[in-house]
Length: 124
Image 1 (cartoon, rainbow, N blue to C red):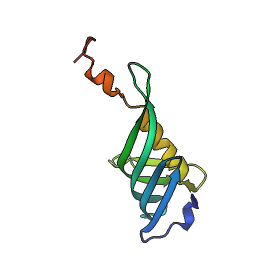
Image 2: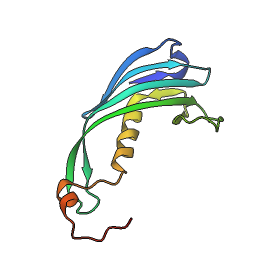
Image 3: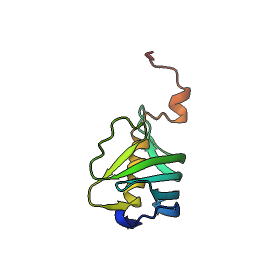
């Protein structure tokens, strides 16, 4: 699902978009001329590789996804919110889902077998 930045309403509007088996749903609204606020939940399943043995496992995603979208470069450095900069003034929810999935996949993940296996040296 895509929407032009200038067509985003001031009042919260519900949305839902799905990429593969992961869905993002929630609300979005414009909070300033160049910022859109998204309050959403990411649900679904995705595959992920174990960092130790490399086996592919399927995990369930159920995460809150609240962030701001900026039309162009974001200047405010004091904001604690996650800000995603949009280059072409078009919000692409499929791209946002893909980005969130890749972020989850980049986390350190151990499968159940490797979690129970204590035959390794662990640093603290």
